[in-house]
Amino acid sequence: MKTKSYINGKWKSAEKNFPVHNPFNNNIIAEVDDMTRADCVEAIDAAHDAFKIWSKFTASKRSRILKKWFNLQLQHKNELAELLTKEQGKPLAEAIGEIKYGASFVEWFAEEAKRIYGDVIPAHGSDKRITVIKQPIGVVGAITPWNFPSAMITRKVAPALAAGCTVVIKPSELTPLSALALADLAEQAGFPPGVINVICSKDPNAIGAEFTSNPKVKKISFTGSTRVGKLLLKASADQVKKISLELGGNAPFIVFEDADMEAAVDGCMASKFRNAGQTCICTNRIFVHENIHDEFVAKLSNKIQALKIGSGLEEGTHVGPMINEAAILKDEAILNDATSKGAVIPIGGARMEGQFFQPTLVCDVNREMEIFSQEIFGPIAAVYKFNSEEQVIELANDTSYGLAAYFYGRDYALIWRVAEALEYGMVGINTGMISTAVAPFGGVKESGFGREGSKYGIEDYINIKYMCWGGV
Figure: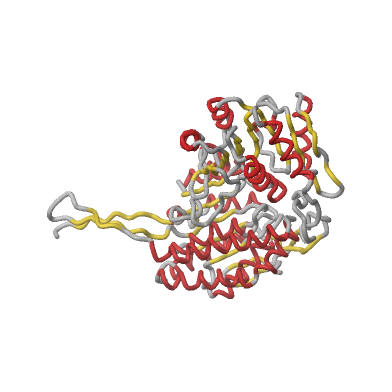
């Protein structure tokens, strides 16, 4: 466990610190040094200097160091997962899954580092030649959330490093320990000083302001709320800074009449209750055809009632605590609004002792309720009825968000129509689990832009340079 920030290959102290709490019992796990905007400037300067060295490394040399980092993450997956569970709350099995998932991005982009190809283009004149090369963009500021404190770092940092960029990471102040542990392993892997820097601060506004205003930062990658993403986008506009945003979601989960019922229920559970519903691609609105609605709800109810709630470190736990009190109050407010407008809660619906919220089923909901338009970010399953393909597509798309969507059905023609009609960056067809390093993760509309993972993920960290050769 590290508690100091990592700047230019050294662990740096601060005059003040802030506590990191275990959301299960609110105990203080560690006191982390609280860095200032001046420290952030130092980290950016270090990354800027290191870029001159790292960008000149051959792709294969960068790849080898990334592979070492990947192997170290897998070697220490159990310790990393336990640390993650302590500061974030998710069940240990999920935490181990996150460590392996996060490491898979490092492995993938270690290999992609050697596949950043340019082009030779047929020229417009007989005495000319046209070539295109791809170059690393420079220093990257990465701002990551608390719900996936390890994977959201590797998903941004691995492609940046593979491309030849250097990074300054600002992890959530709620979960900084996972970021510092990854920095420790990066040091062991052999990254030169300044290539990876981690700034922990209780004042995210100050760090964000430095990222957006400092001309040495050429690119910002942010995962978090739509509100904050818009602020970063506006602040970056003065320098026309390259930015990628992975923001909020309001995922529909559609179950058509011909769907495999058991598979649909299992997929819904996996998508809805993972990480206590605190993920950006969680199922938010469950649309079930009216002819199978009652059967689906009965089966879903049985699954919800079987969930074990408790400490993430306790074996067999399915649902851990909420991240903080504010998250609980938000869920309570959403449910109060729904019930005041006619919704029924057959299961759950209340907070539990500590920072827990009961896995909840809400029925008789409609689009006039806040639960239809707001991102829930909690263990609340809201079920709606629909009666036609046209109606459910209109309902599913009636949101400013466009991150992930899911649906279950067997008619291949319907599957094609629905997949094309859904206004989302990612669509799960007969599956509730879509995240993988080999596919492009990202959204449309107010869920942001840019893609993470896959062959497309490295493009956000590259500039394309066209060279016209004359007098040939």
